[in-house]
Length: 481
Image (cartoon, rainbow, N blue to C red; front, side):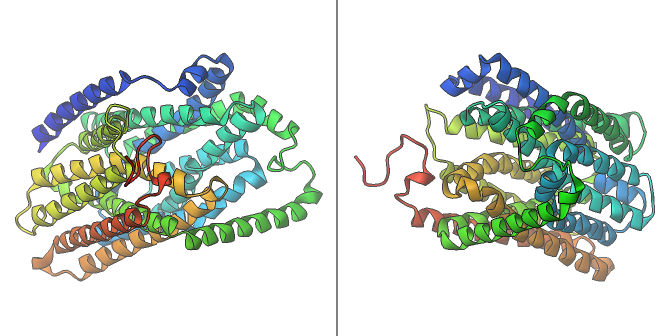
């Protein structure tokens, strides 16, 4: 497995480079060319990317060795499952808080809060006390919720309200973030492997290494985002930090009223449009099994001795290849529909989980087949996320998107928690001859969920067979000549 992991990394790196070179040969859009030629936009974009990419780097560093760290502290798989459940549950609980905090503290201050809470989360990994580790998972859930909301909220506000750049330029920045994000993930696996295994510092090393990155992120936010923050307050933004504490109760009530109104509007949108409901079902099913995969890939492969950091880099490279394939498939020469690619992604995910039910038979493990299945699953993820993002942008109204996506995440996290709790129950009650059967049953359940997601996709596109919103612009509808 040691040699297999390195060979897979070399092959996948070559594939990613080839696909990226091919994708870059395609002509850029006019909006991209105009945005790149604007020096003020480039300066603002650079200001954002320096801090945000450091935050993403710190987050990726913690991916390869989390499960390994808990095993290093001699916790049972059932105990580790509970730790993961606490992390997922905290994501559910803190999701609305993450949307409310920037309105109360200010966007810049909430970014600083993210750096602080994530740093404390990393420090808790030094402790072998189970309850301290649970606290770390709760802080990690809060930090993850903030990472996925507040940085983007700061950028969008500065882009539109402070600098008055065209809204069409926003995807330029987040497209660059997506490109960097994949590279950061691959690099994080290599660096984590270097410190944890090659230098022999143990699985806690990547978590400690994330703290300087978070400190640098906080420094950039504190020192370089100050001017933007003053402009935000001067612009009369209702979400700016309070200057008069006496106004706090009134502001809090209005904030909570806006929050609940937003939640109810999002729920109405979800229930009134069947397309939104079906798309939410696909997202909940697909992304919930990804959380289960994140928990299970290490215990499946680690007993066979692969370098976990290199395996993590392989998984991220496979996801990067899928994302680049999506860009190529939807480009002008091919014009494949995102809906078709979403269906392909779900089929690949089903096939990968189907493979895993046979490669994880207790007493007869086949780690190379399991690694291949995991790589196929990550390839499916690379296709899935841009496809589902395109469809969400078409069927979910912009003003309701944040609230609707929050409702999407609720069943997503609940399904993942139920899956991990079911695995915890099977592991806790397993006898000596049943070790590993819970993992296999969980993969079989994930394959069943992918079949349900596939049915939801078929229903979605049967319902919207002639719906232009579900197709790329410039493509013909059914029945057109």
